[in-house]
Length: 492
Image (tube, rainbow, N blue to C red; front, side):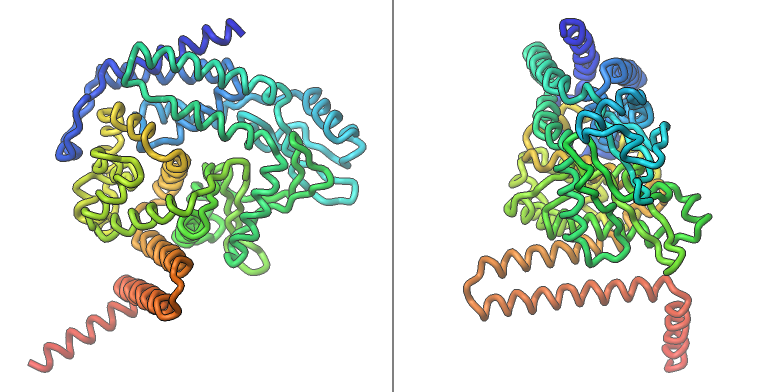
């Protein structure tokens, strides 16, 4: 225990080095001109490498926290996210003996009694568990998720160590605002370590999104599942960020990106029940041989965020304001969500766009390579302000920011970032969510009818605009425009 505390003290000391170069003052007009010096980048890289080494040495909870930080592409300096991303592929593996022990303790039987075959090499290993392919006695092919045996006992001690040492460092560096990370770990880890909770989440989201026929969620086999062992239907496919796989298999990349956006808009804005770990290993794609349709397979349902109604409505209205470039409402709803005077930075964090693009309208133009570099550079320059924001916003926002960054990473890999269709789908969901909320609060039949009519008109406008964009980009649209142009000239 003392040895782990000493290691963690070194880890915290490494991360605290970022504040030696912190920018204390925030000027929204600087978003397009900030440059990060070599000295700062060197400090960040050295600290990030120490973090990675210590996460690998301590395993379990530490790798989980490191993976969380590595997913914050547009919120933390690139040196951190690039260095910590490798933790997704460097998670520890349990031995065959450890796996047998967990199954024996939880299911009361040996592996050979339960399965006809059981592959020794895991399909994937994560910080808390690993997954093996197996065949049951009745011939069903299943995926068996097995928790690492020591994670449960060690996690609470690790979180306590983190909390104590971060508090100590905060006394030395008052700007060191990373307590939100410990609070999230304390809340989420117990849920992620309960595989029965994960199974319930999987069934809930499958039922909630049953109208999306392109979504596939593995079926849970409850009779052979416990808090540490989860048996589910075996599903396979290519990772959602593998554009080459999609092209080889005749899968429409734009359709996948559009459908993924639909799923998450529905989860966030309409239902308030959000799968918060959509890294490429948890989202697969596969073309159905029978129908020819492309399916999205959603895996790993341990981490979900439940959004309160008031938070969800403020978040809906903020995104509506961002899409319309209504800066007064952007300021209003950003403040309501805890951003305070840092609302320009908050808007940039949410959209991963420059302040200039936010003012102009984030749906007006796609993200350029130079703007993407600018945003990532600003993550380093404004790190103290970003961590202050992360400490001030509602806890519900933290996992949404991580989810946003993971989804943007997928869109960047597929070259579909900031497409018009993604904003149109978000707008539809926001309109539906706000209208449903307003109807639920109204006791007047006339008022409810008025809300429904406004909703229908707004959705119709979006459909009309989508049709216009389709015509504009299609061959048919070009013919129509050319014909109208000729008719116009012939009249004069």
